[in-house]
Image (cartoon, rainbow, N blue to C red; front, side, top):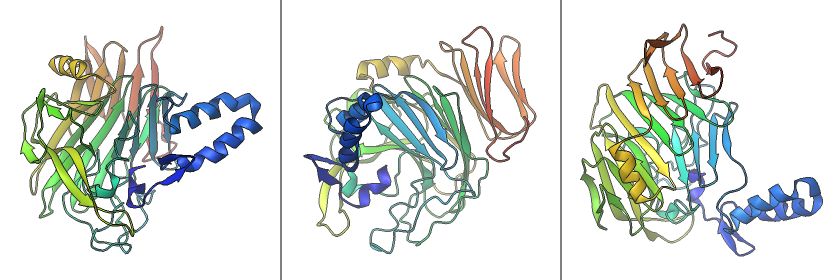
Length: 380
């Protein structure tokens, strides 16, 4: 997880990684548990960099920790949210007051996108702790020792084991908004609506911040090193092995710049960071955003996808955020209030309570997955 980056990773068996600590117990389990030895070995091989996948695919939402894991052979996306039922972070700012509270925003919709497993490891000592990927927040250093709780209780996730959706109702640091994340096989769609703030600082939605690579580009044009918060109207971007599509445009900015920072009790270092973010400005009212992540895709595929996005955005407002994948015949929707969604062809999806809905019509009969994290046990 990205918030670990305030300290250096351990080196075990020649592997320098935050996951290296698992190698010894995994090797032990390969010997001790013959029935599951192959599964342990795949995970150990993944940590050692021998294979990219870890043998696990699917989507799981961990409702006790408000964490979602979306795994495919070629990539992984992890999303952390927190409601009033969950403390988002421990305090860290007393470690380094000059840096600020490094992990304050780590559970506010933070989205870790991993293909090579080096996207963040190659950057973390110089990570900008106030540009967490996936997070909408005022862009300023946080110095409080303990994070204020997020007051948005309609926060959580739903999954059918293969696909999943998460919703985050943002209500902290004088900033509110509706944020949803919808995960499919090849893409994840992130929507934001109703973003408002009384903060004196500009509010940013960070799409990603990772180690800058030579192929960093927007709209097929290279983003030169030294670029700092340059506005772009491009419909797609690329860096490392991750593509980004912006189907509705927006106040998008891009950076490819050198950042300076350090691990705890270590000397400062410099790293090159590629950052994409929506700049909603100061005191926004009802701002929106939409972006699609394409991990593991080639630049050519991302360009083609941007010209004709596969996933359709059905709605993105304060009442409903919804998308549909026509090929999978799968609709996902976050109903922030009771209401109805036009599915086309004279069909309507209607709910009488706020709910997260997955409507899978890919089989002989429709299958609906439903969650209301705000009121457990509620009949929808």
